Length: 349
Image (cartoon, rainbow, N blue to C red; front, side):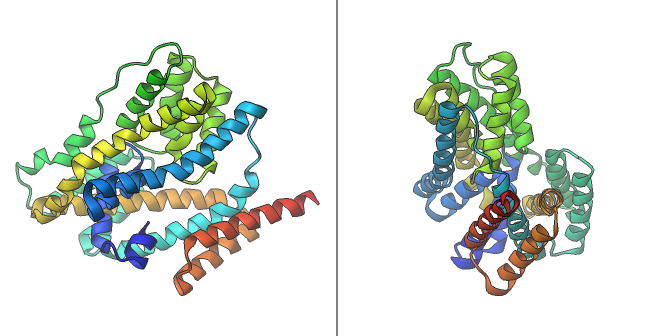
């Protein structure tokens, strides 16, 4: 996103992009989707909000629905180890380049650089991401010595806490309204990674409602991990398995709708936060914490992705091409997929 909207198209400044990234991390739901919706809001208000969000979700939804169809028809998922083998090293390079571009703006002072180190260590040691985000924001308030009683009621933290309201429980039988409500509840309260999503889905769909088996749930999470786009499109796969194409649409709409609502409520407040000295200090802390969380996840992804000389070379070459020639990351991802396919073919021959 940074490459497209900051570097290539110059729709946003680095600081504005960082502010939207920080705001997306403060509200429940899929942060990547919410960042896209925030960008749409900044560019074209309500029309931009709708177009950006739908455009970001629909391609992944269609791919996931196609896998859902194949799963229902054939009873298993196609092998995707080769895809992950080739694409993950490229993704390490893409995210590393984005971090390198955003870090100078996010950590532009001694206080922010020190805070970034602390946030990175805390995240690496397993601290809850909300504790890291809000803790860094609070520490920047103290460091700036500009805290005011008004900021204690800052709207974004309240929105994050307000997301804890649960939707009504779904019925025991699989219905379209039940699918929508269950996934709307999950989309309204979930912070964190695909592994957190796994816990929510297991609690609702396997244990409470009995709609899925443990094996089906694991397959659904795998689909969310291997397909392009937000991991929340796991809902599309589950909806298709449970109730065909209408179920896929209901589940997808349910899990993503809260993101549109939260961004619509918080988007207009982001420029006001930056205009307030106290709120600006808080947002600076959140921004540097967001990059720290990204850095830790990238390191973890790197450990899983760079498993041999070929993948390490692929990541290094991708990073060099990104930095030197500003090549579009999409082409590198396609090349990585081709590399993974070629590697599988060689091993099979």
